[in-house]
Image 1: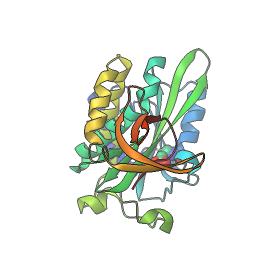
Image 2: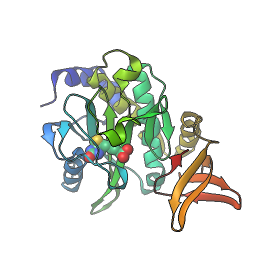
Image 3: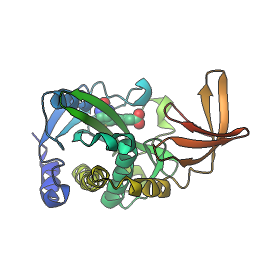
Image 4: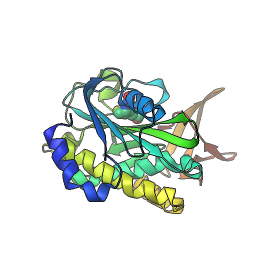
Length: 260
Ligand code: BTN
């Protein structure tokens, strides 16, 4: 059952959310809300169905990493999206813009985006997005977008603790998890509808504005022959990171880029 605080925030934002969160399935504990959403999507869950949990016992991040998901410290939810196939390449960047806007609306903080979809506040990671395509017969583009946000202080393992932060630490006050969920869904509803309607051209300027502090900065990544470095300058129309190197520009489509 959806907890009372979240139910109240969702009720207040019903009109602005459209079909996002019209149905919310809430778990006290589950392995990963993306697992539940992928199962749900494969079984025919409608556009906008949300799967959320107080605690994930096997939360997943990008690149096979664990997403630490302690109870009472974070917001963990996944949304089933049915979009036109043409919208898929820019979907994760679009969701990054929406989550950054949702966090700003619910907390007053000014999040930044780090390619492809990390959400940072003051140089430390506060949230992340894991998008997974789902094969559904007759529907070419069903995507589960899983969103994790550190709401409160939590005992994080040492390997991530110095690079992570939480909304409450940054805001210096208690943050209502239900409001964060509701405002993220409001922003997702707006941005995903724009993208689906063919207004993807609005996404990149919004993404660039939110990533401004990280564009123009030196980056490095692991290439096949060892470490490679350059300067991140832009994202292209397909959402790839454009990096300037001595020999010219390269576009990175996946993998991990470190801002040095
Ligand atoms: C990342 O930055 O590596 C992406 C993290 C995504 C975490 C969220 S929490 C809700 C959903 N369920 C998961 O197992 N992962 C995503």
